[in-house]
Image (cartoon, rainbow, N blue to C red):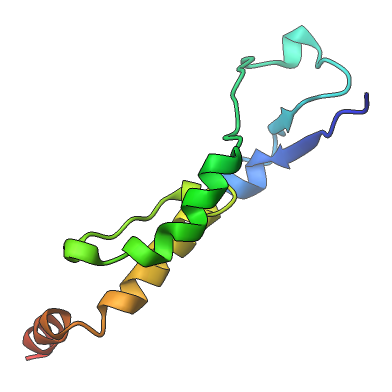
Length: 109
């Protein structure tokens, strides 16, 4: 079976000195040379089952109930960006609450 592989140029992403190229590869099709490898790590990405997908669909019905809000990568596809997006969505929703407006006014004074 074909395997998806992706490499990240860490020098660019993390502002690392370009004179020594550093790449991170997920699922390399050919193992890297051992003398060029800093480490080998195995991670799992979340895999959502039917129950998790159903829970995601019901999330809007419980958001804000008892002043409780839920956010995180699990609210989307499991990526960091999904966690941020879910938090930003909550921020936009609670910014209309009177208490938040009071805090914003007090901060502006």
